[in-house]
Amino acid sequence: MNKNRLEHLAIIMDGNGRWAKQRSLKRTSGHEKGAETIRDITIYCANHQTIQTLTLYAFSTENWKRPKYEVAFLMKLLERYVRGELPTYQRENIRFMAIGDISKFSDSLRKSIADTEEKTRTNTKLTQILALNYGGRNEVVRAVQKVIDAHQEISEESIGEALDTPYENIDLLIRTSGEQRLSNYLLWQSSYSELAFTQTLWPDFSAMELDTIIHDFELRDRRYGGI
Ligand code: FPP
Image (tube, rainbow, N blue to C red; front, side, top):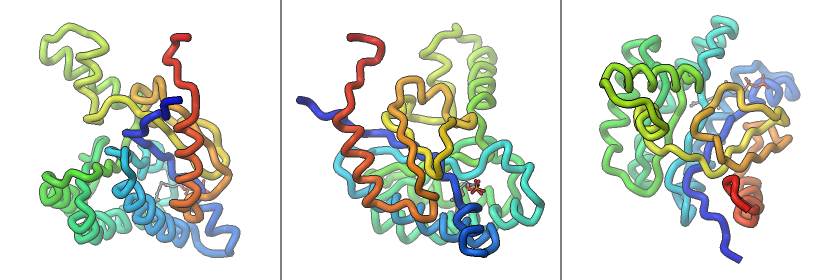
């Protein structure tokens, strides 16, 4: 039997707050530990034989509703991460990209994102995409607008090409922490994704568990509507 080939993996990293609460820590400690998990999982993916793209939901268009101090902390953590990861990206040959509407971010955060994107542009082992101020419906609306502005015909191809994500299909989408919903993430790209849900909270998620989920994915029967 042929195994399914995993090229594009997407993850909804959920449960940082609950992880911290269980330990009587501030929610922000959960986010800090979550950032460490991102590094471990990214390195695993870079060394995986077939994965080419890892798209991570790091900040949604709805996350602005969180308390001010938490949003401010996430912004700082994000900037520290995007700058601080550069040596890892270079060592591991990982390209970094951001998708979503980052126009609301500070100048300095946008500059960090642009710098790291530029410096890692030619890396080839893995593309790590952070979805930032990202919403799936918003992405589709912006893509349709781009097609209209370019006087192109509206079609699946033209809309697909106008999306933020350069790689249209997601093979496997994982959500941690027990919630079983997509929360406006990559709605177009997940049309035929295999879904996997785990109870594990994101800060506790490990390369070992990911490996198990991938083995299960490889054996699934993907029919894309056929028989
Ligand atoms: C969900 O946990 C987590 C997020 C807000 C997105 C992921 C953010 C990180 C992993 C932090 C670091 C990110 C980067 C890129 C440095 P939650 O707060 O919703 O958890 P809860 O549902 O248990 O409250």
